[in-house]
Image (cartoon, rainbow, N blue to C red):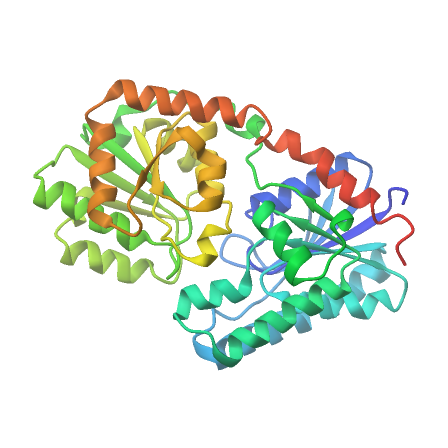
Length: 397
């Protein structure tokens, strides 16, 4: 298939905040594609139409994250209605040959199915396992879980080509989704090293007097495990009396107010800073100042399948990582991390203290991570795989 027009649809985050989707959009643009994007609007990324670096973006309103079955159904229904309406608008204004749908949720396949009737192609960019995510959030299966499995199968049935973020998701596409293996391509989530090349020199003022600064970057939702980091800080600060250790938590999400209240209950609020969502102007200087970084995502079937972007960013910046022993997390970090016992906040704290007391270990892990990121894990190594997936759309009706 020759270069043409592609419409990317993503519901999780707006672009350019969703770094993976934005990097994909820029790579396709650089390869000669005309790129349009439909995504939600949030604070700082207002509703409406804009063009950034040659990429046309349409942002639509979206209700707050759903609570319970009705809330999620309402959120997905509103998003689907906007996606269909805006897809027709993009078709009229710019046209497109391919719909590139990013989950969650899997309802976007309905947009792809509608436009396949007009001869358009559908590429599914599989970011997360929605059935396992539901199980991780609500600790149950049942009818909703079965419905999510059905939507996943229908999405794979609709897709001409699928992209998986790692080998775990590729196996799901083939084994659970029935995809032809030759039509499934692994395009890992990875930071663009050019973006991180301008990391500033560490600013001692950002440490707020800490002898050892721990950084967390990411979403604060029920499945992200930030409570384990707060439990680790309780062990470090209160039980071990190490008030030289401080943590900075960069990110936002539905659980942030509860996590701030938890920090107060655990008597660590004075040693933990919540910055809210951090763009590069705060994120990079704070990571430069940090001595170690943490990924507290708990061990469960969902997280075992996930490639955590934060781990890769930590490694690219040469920071040692502490995390639980997750399958895809270990495939990413290898020997650049210390692995705590499964879902054990105390052991997570002990691993952080091991780094606090051993500068040589910190340096060795950081250098190992940076070297791993300079090879096949870097975004530059993923771009040819992305373009190969688009080449595979050739001749697919």
